[in-house]
Length: 176
Image 1 (cartoon, rainbow, N blue to C red):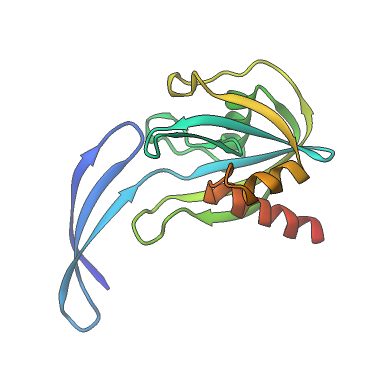
Image 2 (cartoon, rainbow, N blue to C red):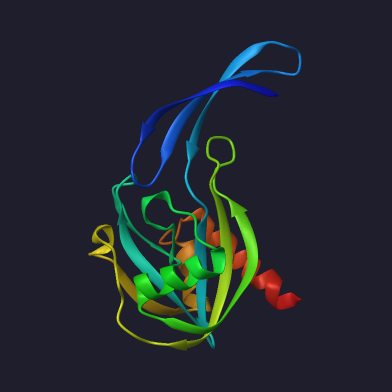
């Protein structure tokens, strides 16, 4: 597939949307709409058998959702993934980690978005004050055991695909 041209049709502080005219392998023309967002970091803060989750209002869904702390840098900035992970953890939960290890990667929605995620395991945790952004003012953070987390997936309280996939990556990481 070959990109013929690309036109940005929308931009804000978190993303851009573009429309690409393409030529397929057989020569036929087509278009793709692409949401471009910077890479994000998702952090599994693990303290023994408990994990820190955050709950926030997800405007696109019109509902509050529990998930692992995750996010991008402001104004579509690109940060080194480990630095971004530490920033998101501190910002959303107030936790500081003595150890942060990358355990996997995720593609959010490769059929429509260029965004990729980096999954981190944070341990040796020290609690502190959260440093939330304006959009996160109503965010809550709480500890949950693994059994509680799995029950929340089963009963639909956790539906965030990135959080569910990241938990799978944690389980595989622990198996070695």
